[in-house]
Length: 324
Ligand code: NAX
Image 1: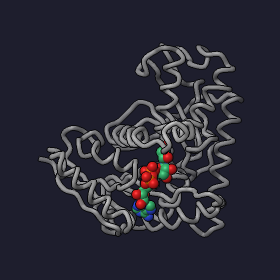
Image 2: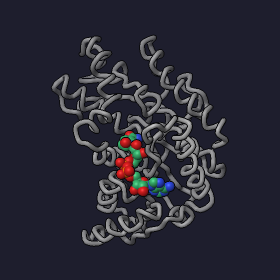
Image 3: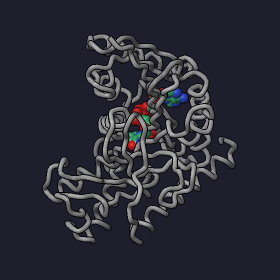
Image 4: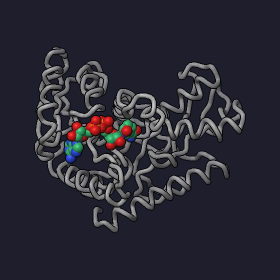
């Protein structure tokens, strides 16, 4: 039998944590033959709730689950960790300025990055889900100088899956017939879901929908879907976010020809080096690689640039706050 893979989930007692942990323990994160041990990181007031979730995990008697650890200490939670899912974050509260939000999250993701740097396994892979995800990932990465930068990623897979679903409904085709979907930029309302490289039946998706729908319906629906879920459900996306986190890590580890992920930019497509921005990526041998050589027309260029500009502003803000 292979040694279990240690998976750390922060914010484990939250709603995404609750939707995520059972799927990890059942083998959906890494594969049906990979044993896992879970580490649940929470803040002290939520430890008891995390213990309750751990009791339910026990009660599933998952064959692949070899142990559960619960802690409020990042140095313990990330000790020997192979996969870290950074879900817990400080939500924006009424009256909070962006600087306050970035500052509060810097206080979480800086120390977590350092703990990963000092204690995680050599093959550590990090996915940041907690918002503002791209910039939280940047903060964590900057506190982990000994870890290769490309091990830090942020989640735009939920946006990617939302884009697949919207296009599938519009064209009345199964999601499996849509290839090469891409989300560019920030996981925020400025993100750019790109139909000019997506293909349905081997033909460019943008040519199979009217441009009015693409601009006025598709892009805003995908970009604002999170708010629409809150409006309908009275709570933010949880199971779909957990599902996207599973998809992101599964593909990272097991390989894929094409998906979307926010990864450290090497300057590709004019995205300044070092920013953690969403790109079309493939994965092989446990490494994401930005898909190169796509032609970007003026329409796409403008939207990618706008979202990347927002990421640059966030990076400037966290620099000025001394968080990186
Ligand atoms: P919840 O508020 O239900 O849970 C968050 C949990 O994090 C709480 O249990 C809290 O105690 C814990 N926490 C806070 N600070 C912590 C720390 N320093 N260490 C460990 N745990 C800590 O939020 P939930 O709905 O689960 O969402 C979690 C995050 O995901 C939010 O930031 C949210 O904005 C973000 N999302 C990101 C998405 C994406 O696509 N990237 C989509 C879904 C979601 O909105």
